[in-house]
Length: 156
Image 1 (cartoon, one colour):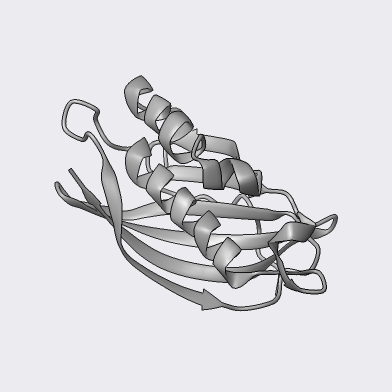
Image 2: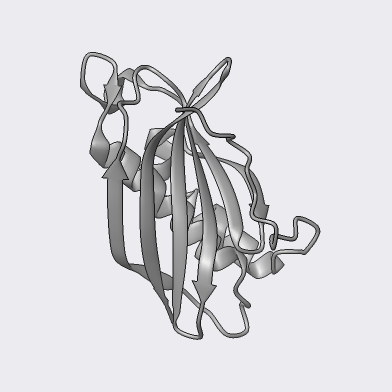
């Protein structure tokens, strides 16, 4: 079943600004990491508590045939969730973070398609942030939801 790729919760404010120092952390630490670069992960959209990442299909990221490996999808989810956690934080209060839990439901195979991860903060506490992450296999006529995750990050 197709779902809209750019669905945004009603409480989301696309006009709010991300702390520039947190944006630099997303760019340098998360997207600039060797694993993100090797997977070709790119930032599509960044706003407080909301991030969208894209990852091209690469033949090196498959399990068998053209099916994208679940571990590659999990890595995309982890990067997107961490970026969403950082996007709504203040650099005066947060210096870093680490994934503390990650639960993924794989719903459909991602066959030979670029992927889009949409991460939204569900709840932000002082030391823990919980994100909902959806991954879509992109197609010309829309996207197919291939994975859904609930993730939490410890902020320090």
